[in-house]
Image (cartoon, rainbow over all chains, first blue to last red; front, side, top):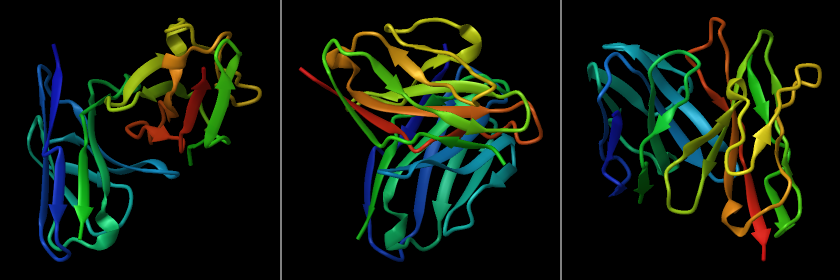
Amino acid sequence: SQTIHQWPATLVQPVGSPLSLECTVEGTSNPNLYWYRQAAGRGLQLLFYSIGIDQISSEVPQNLSASRPQDRQFILSSKKLLLSDSGFYLCAWRGTLNSPLHFGNGTRLTVT
Amino acid sequence: AQRVTQPEKLLSVFKGAPVELKCNYSYSGSPELFWYVQYSRQRLQLLLRHISRESIKGFTADLNKGETSFHLKKPFAQEEDSAMYYCALSGPGAGSYQLTFGKGTKLSVIP
């Protein structure tokens, strides 16, 4: 069966520090991968999605970037964190277009 | 552009009362609609999708293309239904890699 792993679960980082959140999927190949940010009152905001290795689409211009160095690995990064980057970040995957998304447990990022 | 609107941020109902969580969408083609649910301290998970036409945990949702709606309904609310509910849309068109979510509705079932 397929599983998705996302880590760390929580992270506290100072302003200006770098960020790296990792997400991996097991039990499937060539998944569509997604990074969302979940904020109270703002719902789920799509940040990036990827349909293949090194194929990244950015939905919202911001202080973040994403990479997919391997088929089942998706990384969310920042060179210098801002206070506004604080939030709950969710990784997700799906096998085919229009199939449901499967979410990871999320990472709670607090930038101080 | 595709858009999903959930007009209610919070919905409170008494146990045993009917529940309707509203969802309206904007999409030019034939979309795929989903409802996702997030219980306290659990990951976001799929509740149901319109093409399955099934009832999950007593919830149903019918796609109304004329009204561009996909409201989630349950005849008798239970306390364990308290959660955050998100309506989502995915289309077969050019933007179909995207899954667009509404802002969510927090359902609170009062004992």
